[in-house]
Amino acid sequence: MLTKPTLKINKIFKSYLSLLLILILISSTFLTTSCTKQQEIKPEESFQLIKTAKVIKGDITRPITLVGRIRPKIKDSLYFEVDGIVSYLVKQGDKVKEKEVLAEVDSITIKEDISSKSDELKSAKYEYDKVLTDNHYFEINTERNKSLAKKTYEIANRAYANSARTKEDKLILEMAKINYEDSLLEIEKQREEYKYKISEAKEKLNKAQTALNETITALEEKTVIYAPYNCQIISIDKEDSKKITAYEDVITVAGYRDFEVKIQIDEVDISLVKLNMDVDITLDAYKDKELTGKISYISSVAKVTEAGVFYEATVDIIDKKDIENIYGLTADIDIILEGKKNILIIPEVAISEVAGKKMVEIRNEDKSITQIEIKTGITDYTYTEVISGLSEGDEVVISK
Image (cartoon, rainbow, N blue to C red):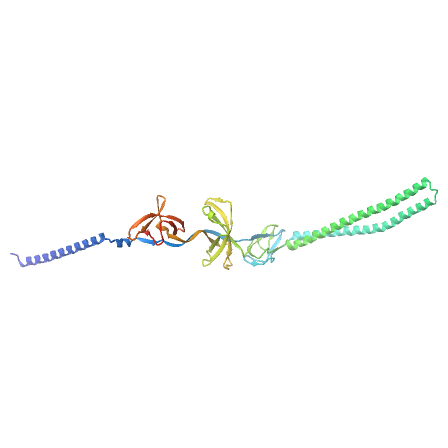
């Protein structure tokens, strides 16, 4: 027979046991239900895990982007042809008009040259004046000598007429005639000599005058640098008020209207790049503006570098969008190598390569998946052209 405390303990134990059995049954039922749900995945639910894209019609372009630095089409380094002390009338960055004075040089060399040429001119003028004076007195003496020779001959003629006209008389007359003619010939000879001396002295005088004029002109031209065209001052290459030597670059200018970009085209793309192709140009400094240009030059000779084989080319900037400070900026050049419009396209990620063949997986109407071979065309590496194997509206698997 059990006592009351013993009965109370038994009741408590039975209660705990009953509660434990209930918990075990509930857990068993939950686990069974959970396992059943994981195993029974419906086709519709599996289908929801596959991502697809439709075959559509669209446009594809294949661009390449090359980087270059903008530079002016015209750029010149200017210099003086004489030594001297330079002084500038402009500063770096200034925009100037054609024939505007940019710099001057104080040249001792030219000043000394002018002094020397002036002395040469004075000497030439003295010689010219002297020969003219000598010729003047020669002409005065010539008339007197001709008159004297003529009178001598006339006297001989009269003497012969009044003589017995012997052989001796005739010989005297002939000698007088010869002397007269020789006098006239000598006078003409001396006259020609004076003409030559005058001509020579005049030519020397003219040369001396020309040399002085050229030196004076050189003082104006060789000691002043003018803007060769409408341009911008790129750099002041020598210190102001300092001595410079002849033919030493003192100032660099460039046109500020026409610009270009030098680029290098990879050998794999060169066959697709043509002269006069349109390009788009973007600048790091002006990302909100897109410039336009054209390819104006392509080298016919490849340039081999450590980075590869390239062809040098030039892009002319056609429209710079009124950007003033464009010189020296970095430019991205976008060239459309090829493009097609209204073609069948699919995402590039849908395509895989199996044994050298381009393959895609398509989802059929019954939700099944089939792998098929396709033929592809151009790509921009996001979308790819489908030449055959798919139709517009087909669904291709892009991930699963």
